[in-house]
Every structure is written in structure tokens, then in C-alpha cells.
Length: 248
Figure 1 (cartoon, one colour):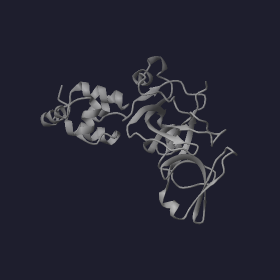
Figure 2 (cartoon, one colour):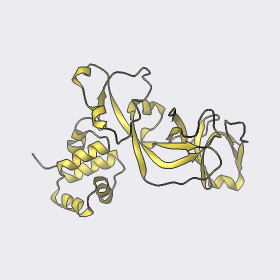
Figure 3 (cartoon, helix red, strand yellow):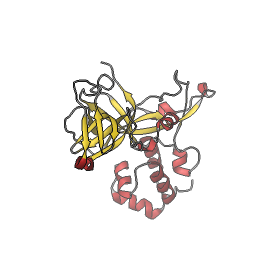
Figure 4 (cartoon, helix red, strand yellow):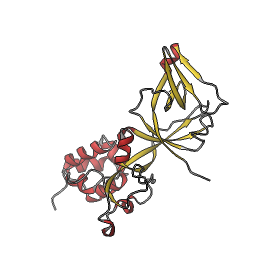
């Protein structure tokens, strides 16, 4: 078997993931930087690296290795009751291979691609408290790619946890929200993740001349008005397009 071209492999990997440097690649594989340098010098990629990265990044191994077939694996399975719903947001620690593997008994069923959405450590504040952000991605959850595309731009989406009760009953403490960071234009009544000074909040937004109003669903919380110099430290992170709630 011919060796796997390092440069072509790395271009495909960089296109599909946030692995953009040899240092990123070494970190993702859990190897020393020198191992990446040697692979580049030999212009060859070990097969085990292909398998490890295809599983970790939810990529089609054939596409990653040869550039053939779809970028993402496909799922052969029964259609959901609501065809507009995601497959299931499964943690990347689960066996994605089992979920996306083709089953000969279901070969006649619809085929669709899946897309991994990162869940970040940042906790969105639905009250008035501060937040702590860790840059590293905590996990990935798997969604139907066509469902995400109908909601917005899949590559700009992140998942975050919510705490606080200012948006109850619509959004409760402990809910996980899907934020599309490409949707930053303000539409009255829509819910957004926003940053103001040292806090990140989940609010309904209303834009008025020279100011932005942050509304809470919980009547115990009064609207917050951002105006003047305060607008310089205010930012719209993205619109919330989906909510996940775990019942206890």
C-alpha cells in the first residue's frame, strides 16, 4: 500500500477541523511534536493516526486518507418521528463508530450525514452573575448535519450550559443551549447569548435608537438597558437556536 501523503492529509484535516498546525496535530494525537516532524519529513502518515483522528473528529476515514467519499460519516437508520430533529446529541466519548456504522438490515432507510458540535466550558449566565471561561472544548455532541444547516451555520455553532433563573420558564438552570455565532443581527423577541463587561448572559434582545434592551422571561428581573459608552463593552455572541433539557 502506498504511503499516505502527509501534506494532502493535513490539508484535508485542517479543512474539516480546528487542527491548523503541527502542534495542534501532536496535541490531538497525544504524541510529541518530533513525531509529526518525522512524519512530514517522510511524507507519510501512520494508518493508526488516520483511524484515531477519524474517530476523534467524526470524519470519514476514506475521505481523510484518500480524499474520496463524503467528509463526514453517514448514518443509515430509521427516520426520526420529526425529520427536522437532530439524530441525538451524543457525547464524543460514546462509540460514534457504532452510531454511524452502516447496517445491512437498514440499508434501504434514509442516509444522512452527522456533524460534531463542540461543547465549551464557558457557562452562560441567565442571571446577573459572572462567568469563567476555559478555552478547551469539553466535549462534542453529534447532530444531523441537514438539521443544523436548516437552523444556521453548523461550523459556527457551539453548545453551552446555562445557570440562573432569569429566563425561566423558557430556559432553566442546567439547560444546554445551541448557539449559532454566525447569527448576530438582532431580531426583536429572539433569544441570544450576549456578553457585557465580564458577564455572559442569555436574554431576549430589543434594539432601539442608541440602545439595546435585554429582556428576561422571569418577571422578577427588570429589563437591562445598554446605551452610550456601555455599548462598547456589549457584544452579541450568537442566537440560541435549540435547547436541551435533562429531566431529573
